[in-house]
Length: 513
Image (cartoon, rainbow, N blue to C red; front, side, top):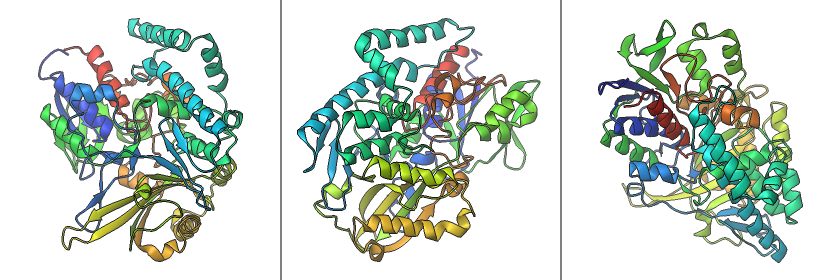
């Protein structure tokens, strides 16, 4: 496919779809992107609220798009006014702990724990950099490898052996497959430090600190962009749309994809709306694997064993999102109003986090959930009054809840109100209104089966060359000319853009210009 008129259709306008489309359009392909919602961006799209303002969407904090992608697509100059965030682990007595990059502070933080944290960050950032060759490349096959597969493995092996050194490599191999609970108990004394780090390891996943592979989930998160700081996710979807359109991508919103068209094992386009056919040489899906293969494509086009693998993907969500409108800015003991605009975490210790997870094992919501909180202050354009909003990511809220979410929405919100009230007295009285998005709601709103943040758990059996499943782990699929570019593909979820970046590079290698 070297013709300049090679037609590419991208299904879904999430950030990975936009990035993949941008790379291909930049390379000279004719690219159309179809998004079923009324705006692009997926989980990073801003949410409209009753006033003219918008607040960050489902993913309200992130480490940002990978720096290589920003350089390639010119995003450094376009993404502006990003607010850098600290993470503050809240304490009911006001003894909060503040995290920022390699530094940690708090009245109850000992010098030993402070130094241990610096060393912990140094070690884990070193491990994450060693994984960079794997994260920013198509995952290598372990059988019938081509030259690119071999090169990726050589780079990975070199990084692990020579970047880490023998001692660090042995430690990496020791902790890589175990749980974060045991690792943190080895490193720290302060329960709140361990609780906050464990929170980062499990957030977005159906796992607790004692779950095997919870170290891997933290390493994956840090490997995406180990030098970046957390910041508020806002304006990203608009920037990515502007970038894609500047390269010539034709974007259509409110375009409901009905099915992926296949002829004799080859993808030939898509069908939208009331039967409109759109032909394409290449179709790329930014949707989750189950939606792509079982809903849009259809199991009839797949080998039975492959269809079974897809159907077995673990992608039931475990996080609910709550958006609240407040009467005024609350106060928290020993935090200034400015400090309250950082990322606030309620995860006082690892036992608390593990107990929160225990409920979800049995299809129950957590009575004492772990929470990630952001406050947003805005000015109402009509009367210049300051509006105060609050967004909360609450775990654990299982997709498959006993009795159903319709019956338990109010009781789950009661648990959230009660938990927050331990840190903000009389919190419920400050709330004007709120909106709850359970994993069921996220499934409907974002067209993702199971409502999972990352389009599937990122355990070792659903990562790297096994993501999303064996037989479709290099962005290609069993259907010729059909590719994946979303979070269901390697290296998984998060607002990094790496699945879209890697998918585009794989397609360009497969069909060079």
